[in-house]
Image 1: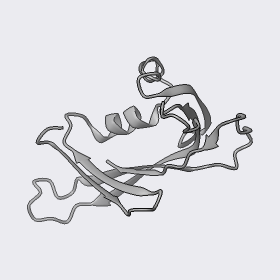
Image 2: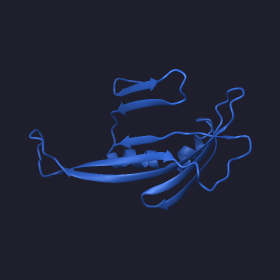
Image 3: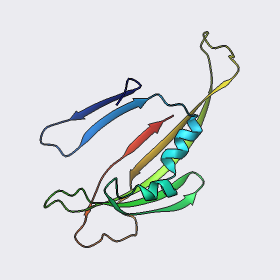
Image 4: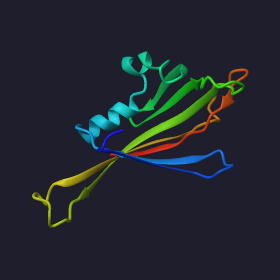
Length: 142
């Protein structure tokens, strides 16, 4: 963690869900940030899979803006089953005209890229014996 990263975590005792809000300043375009998070099957991501407690990972493209992402994670905690996560990843670009008086070029459109990963447990891939379905959803705004 550094002074360019802010993280907030919210959890209710006795509940299995938690919410995290994170923001960071990076030296990259919004397109580069989106591609880095969206592209799960890169050589770099696959080589770091074991570091992130992943055992298996696969990605299936649906179209230019969506993909199905599967990963099996082993958290190496006694009596905790491996988790299978199945997510649908979708990205979308929104463009709006800037209206602030403080902008230098008012006619330049402002672009936002949304990237959403949501649970897709009903996907046709069967659950591996002994594993448990994991649940996670993420929303990125670049």
